[in-house]
Length: 183
Image (cartoon, rainbow, N blue to C red):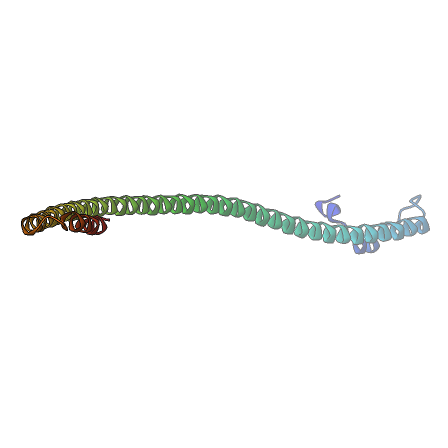
């Protein structure tokens, strides 16, 4: 046998001729055996072709599954990275918004304090102005009363010098008039 026997095909089996010898094998049996061998080889070759096709299909399917798995892993890693990036961005935006709100609150507080201090200064100035005005009005009123009293006393003295009878009546009238003016 040569190395070609390992690559035996059904045609090789059918084409194989044996030398006839006396007391050899029965030629009919040999031909039947060759025919069965050729058919079995044909069947095995068909089975092998089918199995090769199935193996190729499964290999392609396995490659497709591996590609899908790789794509899914890449998508998962990308999704995790995106989630991490989104969380980081949200944290940054939250911190920025918080700082902006705090700065705005501080500005409002400073503005309110400044306005309150300004109002306090204005109200103290207004209070001092009103107190000074009240004091001026009191002094003027006191001066007016003193002047009016002096006037009444002079008129009373003139009446006393003119005659004494109606002095009491005139005095009472002037006092009533003075009281009404004070009230």
